[in-house]
Length: 506
Image (cartoon, rainbow, N blue to C red; front, side, top):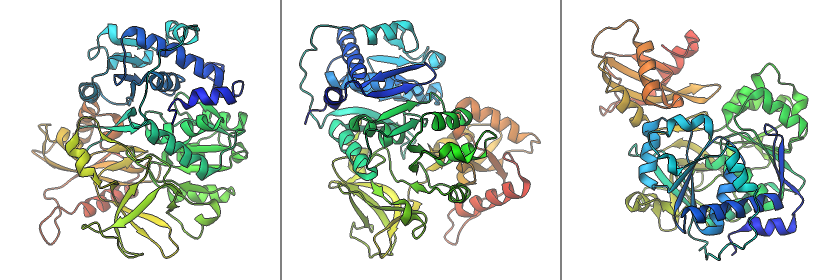
């Protein structure tokens, strides 16, 4: 397998427009895109980047994602996209884990990197010099580098069960297989267009539609940051045919003052990722004659695993569908025996698209796999017709607006505050975000303005989406019959309180 599929695509679709960036007022054909990657690969080699070296990217949605991914592919280097919403201390952990030789960044996010990365290792993708690097054609051939299809193409960091970020290694083969799954699943055509507005530092945005569209020779419209007014205009103006968003984005789109149903007329497929679309969003789309399809994926297995047709959703609400052709799925008990249809067990997945494991973390990799199957940690069931449903998350990750939040990480921050005796962090229902982060707390002493103080403190130490949006002060935490803290009861109390009082911070 030739892992440099962009080079092949550029031969077949040289003058087809690959990417449009309305903010920059630019468009690039497949020939342009491939040449940019070649030019940038020359630059990386001259800088001293070689096979296996990590190249970090700290940037909102931009052509730089494709420049760097394909430049790295050509020389066997490994791209590491980093979430620009993280705090410096969180970014530091990732940089210390993957040790990138060079960091590409967007100029408005430089402040988070300045104390972490020497200037000599930083390249501003918004600077004219970067454009010159990518657009100045190098006539000489790139040296041949044999790139194993099972070597990492990129590493994406995800919240780990220990609170430490884990680098998920996606191979070239895995990236291509996931893209092929998407193409087969959604029957993409070269005339199709997608809007990339979800952040590409997440697997869903990068590998859900973006990479499959490039492999297929279709067209991407890039939105740098999601803005509902702008997204509505772009969907309408560019006649978008396929749309991927997390539930929060759909909610924001629908409730924005500039939204009008006709803007969505060209869209054939609506995909919700990160979490199931809320009932509000589903009903609103149904009223307009559209159906939102809930997809299922993880960083470790990519976003293209199951398929449900729009006409099947009404009879199988909340289902993620059936496994795609090249995906093997099982629901198993704790002994890894298949459960009966209708029974609940853990969902495990296997296939060429599954990750290689975790970067320099053999212990976590070993725990995550059972043979060739990746253990998702999600509880699922299968109905008699073969449709799969996610019942609950075995791991206690909170998914808020498509972002993962580990309760233990937030609890550790809260418990360092002198006001806090103890805390329990849970996710509770939120129509816009699917879940919000909430905390039940025990105070050391009465403090009238505790919520304001804790909010200020958390925003100093955590990314905004990780900070609790509601606090519940308790003398004692509720416990079940065997003495364990009843987190379900805490979730219910938080949800009920916020519904009654119509406010976020209690």
